[in-house]
Amino acid sequence: MLRAVSRSAFGRKLAGSTLYVHPERFTAAEVYGDALALKRCTGFEKTLKSGLTYKFDSPLPVPTTIAWGTRDLILPYVQSALAQERLPDVRHVALPRCGHVPMVDNPELVTQVIKETAA
Image (cartoon, rainbow, N blue to C red; front, side, top):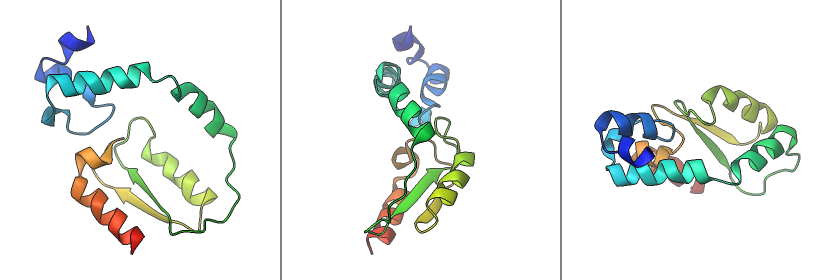
């Protein structure tokens, strides 16, 4: 079913919009592969449960940036406020018009953020 849905432009939008803002940029095979990987991800539930109780309480010894897609459907941008509260000493960056895989939606912006952090 997922393979068939991925063949049409509308189907690629449905199947790919969970991960990226512009699923129309991808082939049917790419959207199908990404959607299938998301469906088969065995660690997601365990990671989700761990994240509910995990508290980060150590200083970070390196420059750190948390960059968050403003259109992320898996980790909604509204959650970035909690990240800012829990990690006040790191740089927080909003990635406008980016989804859960921002390097696909705006590779130039992600590259810029990485370069700024490394500098």
